[in-house]
Image (cartoon, rainbow, N blue to C red):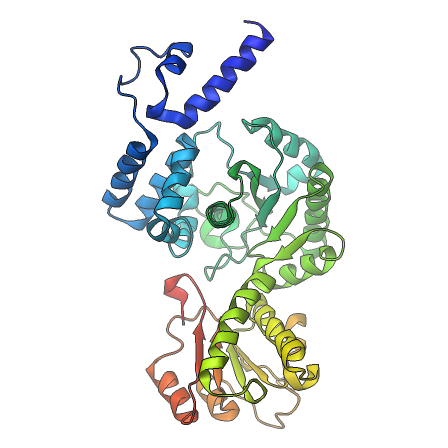
Length: 424
């Protein structure tokens, strides 16, 4: 067959793969499929009806996830018809809370939801870094429509949701997040690129799991990590100059470090630090309007002091400074943090992680609070924000006390950790 003939057949096969049982008769004839597939030619709505029935018949959310992932590999158009037309039912499956369970089991289910020749993104090891341009070219050549990505969600799996270090199993997060962007923002799914930096894992559970698909080695030191990550990012921007990079679920120190290194020289953002902050800021503005406590009088206690918590707090400070003209130091004084060791203070006696130093209290004297209860009594907060991944940390006793401390107003309570089994 001539080169032109090959190209035409490839185009027909590509369209046919997206049509499935709706493939018209002339296309079946061109692909020599007469007598090899059921004769009925359906419309897309009937395909969608069948797929949705199959989805809802699955007994568990994980099985629903596996069905949808397999469907996306077989018929991407039908998959996104389901996502768009049944978003309420599908969104909690392709992302939180079900994606957390899927990530925990990712190495065990991966071979059964993605055909071996189907690329779902890039899995980049430390050994791949020196040949990263080849890896990117491999990805380009694997894409049926040969179009460049316009956004990537990239993780190293080191801090997935509230589940910890999942290594390569964290790939479910970039995949799920980008699927939501296609549904909500109308992005072309062919222009989205999930990436996991498979630099190792410190989880003994996965290092000892014979079915774990990732690199079986501990995570590298900071110098090695940043050198490798920078080479990957530089190569991505060389190949795709207009690419938007979203950093997702990196360990706290690396999340801040990558953002600091790249935010002023490339199109990028960190979802945990900036994205979560934007969303919570919107909710907080609305909550303040209903709480009956003026913004200047808010006393905000954070439970949890990771990258998401600090990112949210800094967004709130900018809001107070810009919208209410509260000086930064005065705005910062409206915030208290509790981490695993208690209230964060400058004289607590331990070495604080760099991202916590900004919010360390200097006005506590000799007072050190070692629990949420003690911090409540000391701070007397008007708002309680949870990003601790401690299940039911905001129990009935805590909530009752918050109400008692705010008898003339409505306290603001934001339990934000996920998935469900990690929510306050």
